Image (cartoon, rainbow, N blue to C red):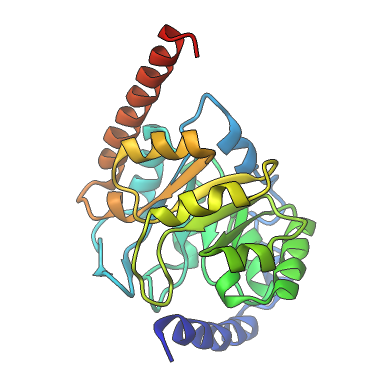
Length: 276
């Protein structure tokens, strides 16, 4: 089996174990479970915000350890202060070094939406996400059938959570796109080979329905890329590794977002000068 197949096989085992330790009736008693959720979609569409989803990720199967020292509380708060529209928090422990407590700790630090970044294969994980304070869940088309995508998306929305569908190619988009979805993300990283190509986003952006909020994920390290992708039709961007490889991810995010805003303003002034 490839790495992705191993992750999913282990995830099914993990979920069954977690169900025994903390059944849904226990999760529903969490103080976070009754909180009003925030809309990732609305925050991404807010022109006053950056449209950037900053990610907290300690390690990955392809890169190994990325950052083993940063505090999720400090980084999360710093990300929001830097201008992030939302946060993505990895909760997979075995392969990404995350935990559910990472998201819970981040939740009390910020007032922006939080995406639970994990490999969701069961509705139990969606109840978990709600109980830890998440506002949005991730569904990965590469590991779910179209029928399962629709079922899990509907279940998540019934709990007041938004849904980000992640695709890697046109086949996944055409097969798995459905209602209800809130955001579609194009992942530039092939989850089977872990190779990254930013061209993937540009190839798919026009194939996503115009009314859908679109984000580009993975491999983004240059603010100028965001300017080009915004022009192409993307509403937002998920960036993690580029910041997390720094000793102070929140400071790197602040510099990146500041430069992105400068470039966007420069572009806007140029358009106005030419009457566009």
